[in-house]
Amino acid sequence: MTVTELNAEEKKIRIENSGIRTVIDYSEGVVFEEFSNLPSGRMTNRDRELFVIEIYGKEYTSGDFKIESVKIAQDKIQELVTLSMELPAERLKARVHIINDRKNKITVLYQIRDDYKTGAPSVSFLRIPLLAGLEAHNGDDYHYYPSGVVLTEKGRDVMIPMAESFHGADILMPLVVCDSDDRYGFSVQFPSPSDLNDAGATQNANKQLTAISCSQELQNHRLRINPDPSFNDTVELCILGLSGGWSEAFGDCRATWQSRYDFSEYDRDDLQWFSECVVHNFVFLYGKEGFDHEKQKIDVDKLLMRGDEFGGYDTVTIWNQYPRLGVDARTQWDFYDDFPGGREALKEAVQRFHDRGVAVFLPYIPWDRGKDETTDSMGDEFARVIADTGADGYQLDTLWDLPFSYRKKLDGVRTGLVLTTQHHPMKKHPVEFVTTSWDEFWSFDPMPEVDVFRFMCPRHISPVISRWLRLEDKTILIKRCEFGAAPIVIWQDIFGRWMPFSEDQKERVKRWKDTYLKHRGIYQGGHPIPLYPTRTRGVYCNLFADDNTEDQIYSFYNDNEKTCTVEKLSVRGIYADTAEIILGDGDVSLGQDAFAVRIASKEVLHLLVRAGRR
Image 1 (spheres, rainbow, N blue to C red):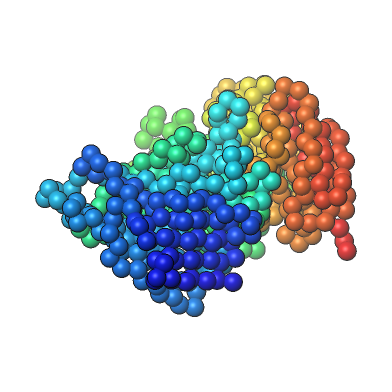
Image 2: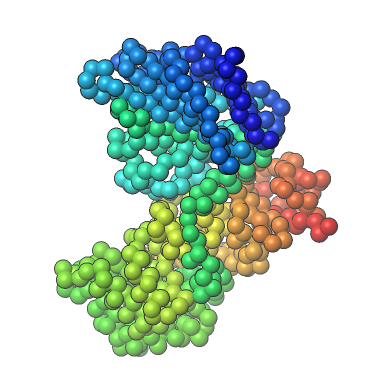
């Protein structure tokens, strides 16, 4: 049911859909009389002013503004209420638009206009009381902040956001407020269409809201806005009424993000082979790990025999340039010719890898660009190397993007060639055609940690890698792969420094590969949920589900110093038939729609829950 009703006599507007009910009272000023989650049956967020503006050293609330007009419009999809108001003494005007999607979302959009009382623009700030005190039930509400989704006991965010520079990333987490049962509440997304982080260069202040990381920042938020005489400055809250808690909120955020993209490149049959690759190797071409210096050739058998200790390499990246590159006038392309035997010898080695079922990647170094080279000429060389060697794709050093012409030139060589960037693609253009990237981290304390891109774009395969880790840290690296259900890159010769994995670590990687491949349909399902609530201090969980069978895997990590038991964890969305541990050590007991599981300290455990075949 969707309803938008205007009671002109009482000066109230009621807006309702299946998820949210809000009543706006403009009889004396303008307030949200209530903003409630409809299915919960609770009346919440009472008597909240629509906004507070700070300008000229004073604060003005929506109650200080005079209503000019209230208008309602609708089409087959949405209903719109627009309240226009003014504060003549300060030459300020405001428009507040409330948009009902007739499903379960309500968007509140603020537009502020400043006609410059002093003849020039003044510093202005906006606060939104509804947002500052948003509640689902009462004081025991659980919050997920956009920039601090779930924090460890040390205050570190478990969900690692997309790296940003001057240009902002496309993936922005919502503010989520749930009741203690992780059911009813609200998810607030802050749409930010601008490509820039610079608040002064944008007409949308939402980017500031995505930086909120704690309750104090939420309650005291103070958005710097840049109003002018054109209603150009905006703030937008897209609010979803939740009945499924954090899982629903994250799923909606992912669906909204994905709706802006064309993922047809990920559907290409010729590129699917990479999704079956779990253990990747990065080898320095002239190092002892994989090169026979007496015979001056790549020792394929020796390298792959070492790979068998990890369960077998699925791909090998042969690195042949840096740090030699730059010593003289040779380019990255020259190094393929200078290899003993030239490109033909490299082609023979690639074929030997192929005969063993192993794909080969070559490096591309974008920063080695000669003075006479152009993007087009480098793209030609880029394609020619693959044509000459028969390799299966490129590892794109330092990149998160690439000219699309390079992709087209590769397709002209042959199908099935894969591009892997060193960093995650962050924008629409590269996300749509770069189908895999490294999940590389540089921290020596990466657990518990969740790669947000792995869950937002699950078809984008991202092997985990961290090059400088030593013995104890390499174990944490493997745990990070297990916890996030991701492949791994084995890199042991770090430009001449030998940093091997131990025998126990090799066995652990081998065991993880077996588990991953056996349950690949679940781990690579399209709707994983990161940080599924355990309500157990220091125990974290990711949830993966098969798109066809609905079987689920709960991936736990216990960050406590002792063994912990998660009690009565709800099974999400299915009737559970059986539950068994498929990775790690512990115990599990399955009850009616819930289970209890015991997890060892600082360890990962995977629990397979099979859906009932009714």
